[in-house]
Image 1: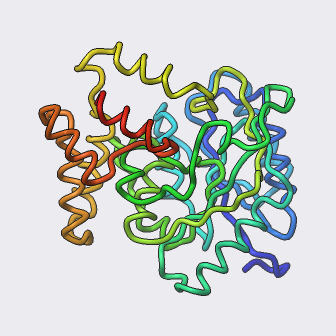
Image 2 (image 1 turned 30 degrees about the vertical axis):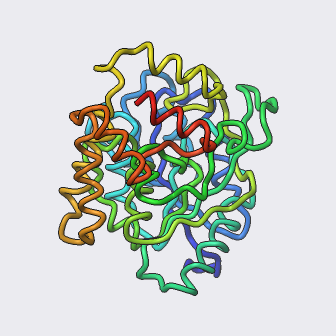
Length: 315
């Protein structure tokens, strides 16, 4: 707790050439209702005016900003990994550089967090995340629900499901200290920081979701990861056209191997076995791979029964 009686959330912000939009995001972080925010930020090698803007906010709001220096260009996952190691506090949130948070975002997530902690204790690793509104570069509406727009089902958050596809978007995440400590360090082979943290929460703790859009998720053509609405059959056609070598699961398999290596001593045997089997999918023959996918549920989230069948048949 901070002196004024409100809860403090440490916001982890990585910036790369974000000068066009970062002021709006910083203002929305500072303007959170009923929650005091402290921003730990890192510039990931910007060549625009991002650094000048961040320095301006450091000077205007002493004690509210902490700059993490050094490390060069690390990319999103590496940069957020450094921030996670540096961030202190009971609760931490990831922030992108180009979104706008609703005033109630952190207060709503904290309410959900405290409810889960009240049931399971603060020593339990917990992640809470929310839906978002999808907007354009000038905040013009695109979709009222990112989950519906992108076909994301937040209830599909089992370890088997998250190994295949992530349903947690980093800029919506609030995590408690137990999860932050568990998830670090984030290895180089992690696909993204949010994917890794979601795997940790699923395997060892709890993932809670809030069915309200608490962020304006800005799409402007230069997003590191963005919102895409593409029909399943278009995606399947592209998938089949890539050829067997490009269709493999290599990035996800590497992440699974890293997860197994980092947490082997903590994982129960069934989860270890599942991770071992997942990490070998691309080297399996087609029949064995399909049988594994059915047995362990290695199928992307958001697919209906028919589409799951089609996905397995063509994998």
